[in-house]
Length: 203
Image (cartoon, rainbow, N blue to C red; front, side, top):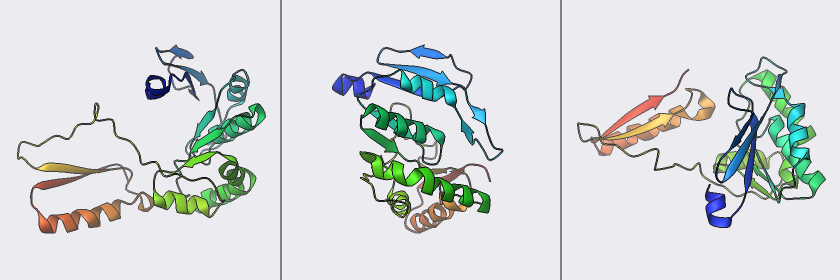
């Protein structure tokens, strides 16, 4: 909506089939969903031949892909090169957290990841740590874009006690940084007593 409101851009989104309608039309953008084939028991490693076909029919001014390490980034990058349009890549990079995933990512880095990073007009990590990790794989045109918060949806709320609430939202896994948040919360607690800290996540 923002791209349309600010620049008059028409946006088409391609997403995995998740129970929603196959095609969806809104005022400023449309959605088409493709079927996927699960190729692994490792939490959502899948492929889609249908997505390639959908992208092949389009004549975009640019293609924006999302999520390093998954097929969406590969097909978006290949389509952009075939159509000779800019490729923009939001990486949402998660370091592998098991030996098996490390091996899979090592193969991906060599066969796909490095050329996507190097060949994209813009690579958009969410933070400095993500940028540093991706820089080890390949040089790229990095620009850090912090995760946005839509204040129309998420509003700061006071509890009945009048205290502020600060939350860590994410799995309790080391690479997500819950212990870092915990250490920060403990430091804040030394200086003020008007804040409640909440952890939300499994693990």
